[in-house]
Length: 164
Ligand SMILES: CC(C)(COP(=O)(O)OP(=O)(O)OC[C@H]1O[C@@H](n2cnc3c(N)ncnc32)[C@H](O)[C@@H]1OP(=O)(O)O)[C@@H](O)C(=O)NCCC(=O)NCCS
Image (cartoon, rainbow, N blue to C red; front, side, top):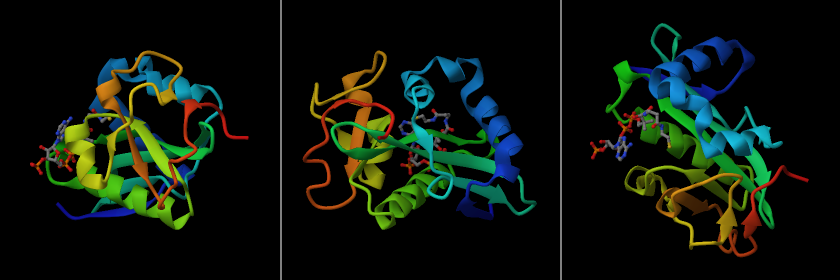
């Protein structure tokens, strides 16, 4: 399926909500990642990506937020691809584009909650246990990070909070 990846804009809002509802269902707001976003994380639309189909409809989204944990950091999520467009490589393409944008922006690293088996292809690995604390329960095997520059994660530790 033909698609393009672009930075998120206000005009995508309704399409993004539709994809998130279809991909996650009603459990969408119960996640610990949602608590991070509620507690003052700052959305970075220029680093976030939406996937558009040939008709211009939103069929995927990957959002990037500015947070802090001992050092400035990005938080990735939600990542969602419309069920009708899943398993065609779009999810991974969205993540890779966001990682490239965050790296070009000069970031230290990116943290997320997700399946290591999926995200490792985009450069993510499991955070050493106890190193980072989120505002809610997280399976330590699903707390992942990705370094954006050599030594970028050296000072990253502690509670994930709003950026200063
Ligand atoms: C997770 C999601 C974004 C993946 O999107 P996608 O476009 O289907 O993913 P891709 O086609 O890029 O998948 C790439 C690879 O990851 C695998 N994969 C997909 N979802 C996976 C998952 N949840 N866990 C492990 N592997 C997964 C695919 O099988 C594929 O492997 P392959 O290349 O060996 O066949 C999509 O399934 C989705 O929106 N799910 C519901 C919302 C969700 O769970 N989001 C993630 C929260 S962290």
